[in-house]
Image 1 (cartoon, rainbow, N blue to C red):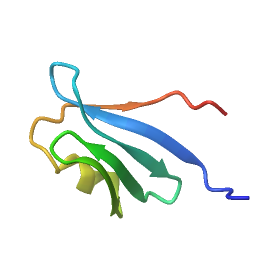
Image 2: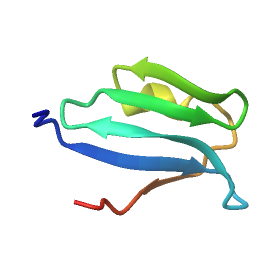
Image 3: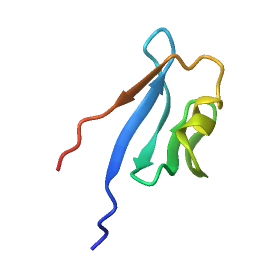
Image 4: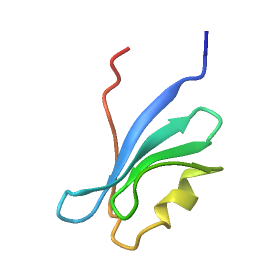
Amino acid sequence: MDAKRRRYFHLENADGEKLVCGVLYDEGNVQVLWRADQGYTAEQYSSLTLVLGLMPDIVALRFEESDG
């Protein structure tokens, strides 16, 4: 059983369009699952700060409701 807690999130522009979707882990690592400019991906980043710099239009970070 994988005990890592995951927090799903997405990043939006000023119009509310999703630009990035991914998962944030308790350790601070981030996995980007989808990007508006590339489509589905599996990029790994060591912090959320690096993900915020992917696109200049990002203005909002929203955590998504978990099913668990």
